[in-house]
Length: 445
Ligand code: G6P
Ligand code: MN
Image (cartoon, rainbow, N blue to C red; front, side, top):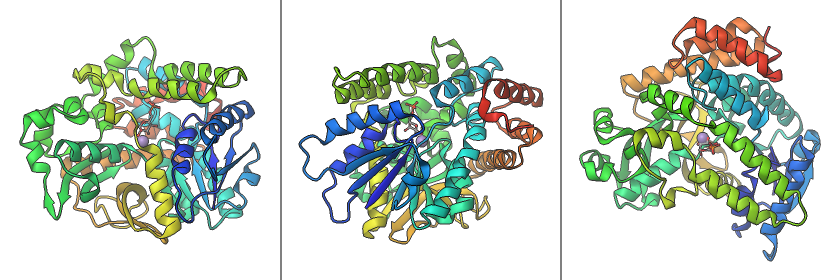
């Protein structure tokens, strides 16, 4: 079984490789092909993987290449985890938006639109190459903004592309933990778009135990999302939102907090990773130890500004290893070995959420087996959630249309229609600001 990782020089590749090393089962991945545009990043990550594999019998063989076609030929699975424009691009996305007084997060609001506009054309290029060179491969998309990018790729790959995110899994696990339920026994009734979903229920043996959590302020205060959103607001909603909804429900506070920080998340990660790649390229340093230190610091500081505005304190120990690699591995195993699994994934809607059309990529629980990921029937979203989901999907569609046509006016429309962009004038200035800093947006005319 061959797995190709696009963005193979990326920082989180060792997480995936670590999960593969722990998989001893029949039909496991035996070959990993790393693809990246940057040779230096590839060799740094390859060094980390070599140190991880030391002493592990039958560790998957690793090769690296900068040639996309070579990487794709013969692949059974393709993970796409690329970052168009690099972390400097992410920092620029944040800076331009914050200067206009709107959010610059990489997946939410203006920042997510800018990132989507430069990523979609590249993702579509990859999807076309996959369709041509590895038509039977399954593509697992990690690339953010994950829902939008998965939808762009699905237009060329159909249901062979599946988007993943670890946020819903983490949320489901935390809710199960505070309720004293085994997460493996619980069905998480989660629905929405990527980074825009809600847990409406947690069913154990057919019974919904979420009302018990919503009724108990002490329990609500004992986990990340409870502290982030506050017990009162969660009771008003009657659901537990994905952590990224903090940017919507507390927009003013998060924008202000982001404006006041010394360094935005993207700028922090840019500098942090520059240090790591320099260290890992030095033959005198232990690459795996440097990687692990960097990873721990990244996880501890995740969403720090949001937690600070909410007075939510530090992250909990159990929440620090996100589960990113576990979702990916579970998905691959379910497909490769026909092991039925229920996972929250980004797939085409096909009537699951009544508010959206069939082609819209949504984030919902799916039954996965050798024939792919099939969304399970879901209750309609409540009005307020359906409204937000439809508004954001409409924005995503404008991003896809702008990427296809190269129309600057359509790009303006995408920004202007976003619920977190408060004026058409601001949308115009955002397009000016972003096209001025991003060479990857030169196609907008
Ligand atoms: C969560 C999100 C991902 C994101 C990751 C890292 O897991 O679901 O989409 O890539 O956090 O966030 P960071 O700010 O550390 O890049
Ligand atoms: Mn995510």
